[in-house]
Length: 324
Ligand code: 8YV
Image (cartoon, rainbow, N blue to C red):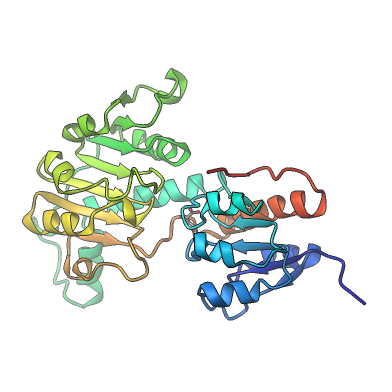
């Protein structure tokens, strides 16, 4: 008997509770080995599917979208960022695109704070020293880092995650500066200093946190000229997208000592990050863990499913539609 449920291609292995709901409501094409699809294998696997549930590592660029079977009506990404989906190309084919905002705000802001603290307090060096059995005991000058309390934090991109980062930093009595496409209301600003031109913020940043999405305008925004405007000894934190940073420029500044350190959870071209990072002791590096809690990953999956179910089962507009 023909299966009447809409067919959904899940490009990745998603958390068990998410896949349970996916398979209960849809004829799901799963990926139990979590192998990465390239463009030809993705378009092939999507044959006969109504929708694709994808994630940030999948490249749904214009060429891939153009090659998708005509049965595809929706792309639901398991992420808040959607730079990996060419939304304009999808629109041309009447394919809806939806994402998963809000639910990963706190987890990502937590990791941003972890990166800030890890970079400031030389967590990588301390942990490596201990695990290599090289720690011979406490010393007055050992592993002295950068004090956090009372310092100035500049946030580039004051959306949901930027604001959640600011809330955490306020608990460390940091002074918040920010730049954003539009100024926040006084209630949201909570005393943070707004810089209409982000370049004007740089001189005020003991710490700079990148919380802006990846767009043609933000690509390699953190470049050599802007790094030079940061005070000597500043610390750069990136939990947004690696492409917002010019790796060569950041690595050069970390080597020269202009920057004290960096805390990075995301990398241009990840998982193949710039080789230069591996040699830097003053870089606290994490493998894109911003949203990696059980609660958050489940909530992201359920949100992606809310989008799929609303459109494919109830023929209504999905709650988290994104447009070009
Ligand atoms: C996700 C993220 O886990 O949602 C995003 O945009 O960056 C991550 O935290 C990842 O992208 C999964 O698709």
